[in-house]
Image (cartoon, rainbow, N blue to C red; front, side, top):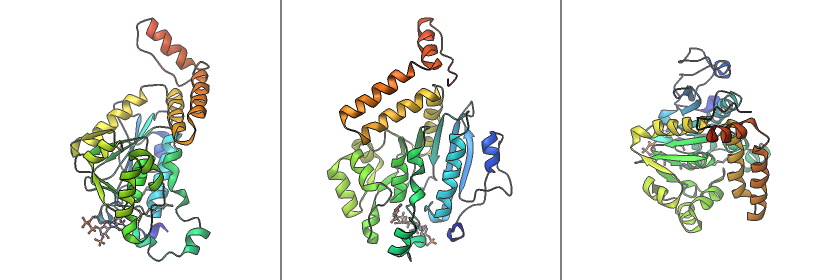
Length: 289
Ligand code: CO8
């Protein structure tokens, strides 16, 4: 399937090096074709994934998604990494699922083969994931950004769900996450017309949390990742789980989940350390225990 993808650069990193946290640069003959992977930040504690299929505006072919999932698995199991940033290029975060790869699919292929069922790996990440979006975030690209926990946008970013113009509908959460993020009227308008919204409109509607000049978005996303990674990874995961509960549960159930997780923090060393450090007027030294 990966062979179907076109327009990828061949700068890659071996996954084993990512696991060991040993890499400092790119290495020949390594396993990634469609993404670039590094650890960033002063303490090398932010996992960084750059979609790198420039000729196809980072269209999300099957091979790219497989690599993205592998990189996420590696960062999730790397104890040094406390947050992950996903970005694209200045022209495109991602212009959607690969239309050329989908063009000749039949219903039987899709349904029988659970087509693109592995697309939602980002949404099951336990570590926080920040999307740094420049340029087009369309269709599956917008859906990918919305699977992340925080979206930072460049001033010229554009978000859209143009599937309707292709005779189909969003299939990776677009109708659901967009509606929760921006409300029914704007989501309907975007999904039914295929019209895009600007970064400024996306910010106003609550889809993105911050806008920066295009050349600053990635560094700001990394800096946000570093800020998160300075906290206890254990407690950060609990906080993330609790916020995500708001999308799945009733208010009463969500509040119960929050309370259980809040109580659970009292079983951790990091909660003790955090409060002791405050009382002793010093900086907390979290150990993720
Ligand atoms: N798939 C494949 N190739 C693409 C895609 C894409 N989504 N988008 C751009 N490309 C390719 C173009 O074909 C072109 O390649 P080539 O040079 O070989 O012809 C190259 O990228 C550059 O594109 P353009 O020449 O079109 O560049 P422009 O700057 O003129 O236009 C646009 C940029 C506006 C982004 C335009 O390329 C465009 O409209 N792209 C398609 C956007 C789109 O419709 N996205 C939605 C795709 S469907 C989808 O995402 C469904 C997800 C469902 C997930 C289901 C999971 C279960």
